[in-house]
Image 1: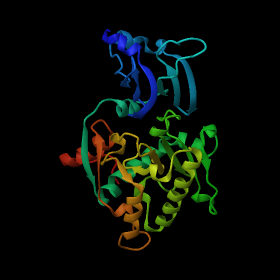
Image 2 (image 1 turned 90 degrees about the horizontal axis):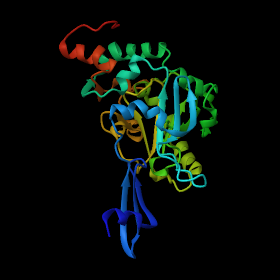
Image 3 (image 1 turned 45 degrees about the horizontal axis):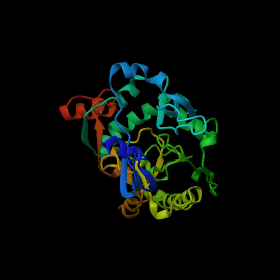
Length: 320
């Protein structure tokens, strides 16, 4: 029997595992009555210019999952249907940013990373003003649209009802999750409070609220996704975050760690809460007093406008 014929004669009996955010699966079955394992994963995209030029025309059955401001996301097929009765399931998760800016181009381009250490002084003098500028440029419009009920309300999975309205939060799927593969579950909790730009704004007096928020999330997610238990969830925040409005990432523990979960990007929520609770000083002491080390891309504004000039001993434009 030829090697190719073995694949066609594989008889499926059981899904053993699915990992790499649903891009790899291990099937148990038989071939001619003998036990067999079939390990399948999606191949790399063809980077031939002729294929890339036609990419937008090759995908089919595009299903819009949502849109907000300049961001849109879809499910689609890159393969033809098997038949009208059994259509091929979507195999592409597509995000579209339109119209995009030069900042988006830099963010998504390949770039080397650098490890930087942000002291409380560097944060106060250089990074905090940079954050303010980003917020004033309208980069948070899409977040505010969600919080104000103007968009993506069909995607809101849970809206809390706290005694104090300012403590409320919304729970919704991360736009990079396919919304169906439990093992790659990725949710976001957006707080309604607008005084928290990042983990840097958290103080000792926020520790009780954060513990309550984590407890509420840990109880809510399993109700939304049967089979997911509290101890199957990880909670973390990013620093630096992609956007400056405080939010918490909730992911399944089996989701393969990527750069966004690695040291230098992700801070465990429990660790942040514990650090706040044990921090010396009064209630106003907080993460603005900590020294944080993280990675930045060489094309990012944080590197080109702040950390590279500091490294080279140059002045920083616009510094307060």
